[in-house]
Image 1: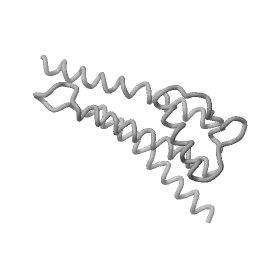
Image 2 (image 1 turned 60 degrees about the horizontal axis):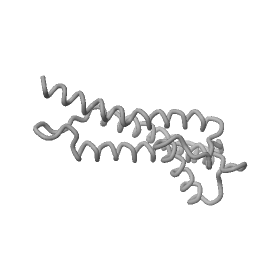
Image 3 (image 1 turned 30 degrees about the vertical axis):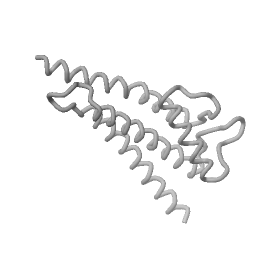
Image 4 (image 1 turned 180 degrees about the vertical axis):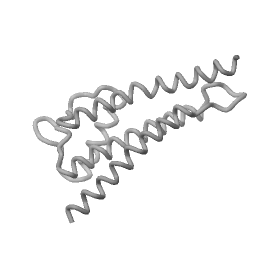
Length: 144
């Protein structure tokens, strides 16, 4: 039973990673509709969906590691835990705060969680840059 659970969690972690990569590629390849403003509502909506996907993907990664018994987060001096709903709430909160800022320090990554949080924070800084770069490149190409 434990092997089956580990196998399922591993598949979910792989799917979350692939989802994050695909979302970022969609953002980089997306071009606003010709004849409209270079930064459209559709472009902002895509950026929002990419943010949500990345937050949830990293949340699934943290949750999967926690369910495998690899502690990645601490709250105060204790590992994050309790009921599953509290664990999910803490993990999604930590993921969003790490992506959108550098964190508040109420939940702290430990072990491999530190590396994952660094990667997630880098994504948080690169996503707006990718958004701006794709918009500027589109405007530059249109003016040529």
